[in-house]
Image (cartoon, rainbow, N blue to C red; front, side, top):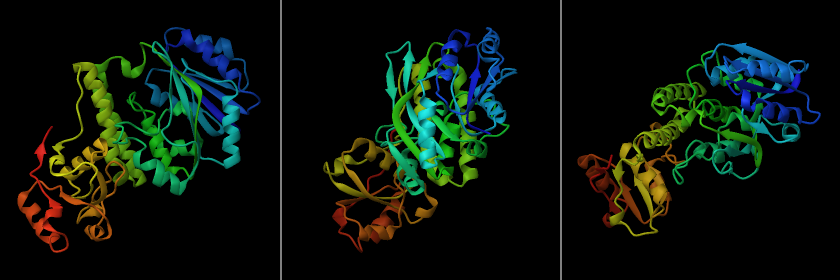
Length: 389
């Protein structure tokens, strides 16, 4: 068994393949295997791969009919015999000795996964894409409490904090197969996220380094930038598959709101490409006019209105949320990294105002009557929620 397998899916990338292959030859003395999987190329990519690397003992070259990158990667990993697996796209390249350095960290900490950063190259100005977490080791409790709450989407920046690129991850091969299966076809948008984010929940030890070892080539054939009209259907396939994966892992309650917002970010991007303007996930106007800037508030109600209010407040920073409560808090989902708490938490928390996030006036009035038994009436705010989208 090898220490590391590098799976390289190829599709009409002959122009860039030699640069990729040369970078893979410059990986020191690492015990690794290379698996090139040709996804039905018609430009001679397969023949060039055989010419460049076909005689190397640690190289496999597989040819298959075209089915997309997710299934191509899966077929490649099935062909490996290694403890760990990573990926490189055939038009990209990796820094010299990068895998050797990364595997040393894997061995030192006995990691399940290591994640690093990358540089976007090509027809844009090169820029680094980093994880928005500190470098270092994350054990299970830190993974759950620090990484998970905002990894797919942080409302404060309306973006992910953990970049999902599989080409910038080394993970245990068995973790990959806990998520991936024979039904990987049809997803060509979000295929990295579909593996990386669920894998986080399986990891006991994760290491993040914001050193950019990988170079990601952007050009006119890149998936998200071409054929915008075809991407909506592919995005829906991703939506269905990743929600099912999180359900199987028993973490839907932690991730459904992040998936919602992750989808919104993609939809906003596709929508703006098609129509030239953006959409927003905030659905109800928050009553800032009834508050003073800098106030600490408690939000009562974790339904549709409550989620919108929490999202708005986190994004704006005009006021802060001390606690978010609901009578049925156990049935409610996390929003913007904040979990609903029992109503009794109000008596244990300091805040300036309670904002009732309820659509129905009669229900809101009943809540207000209950609250006035413990809090001054002028500390309690309810305004009929106004839908903004």
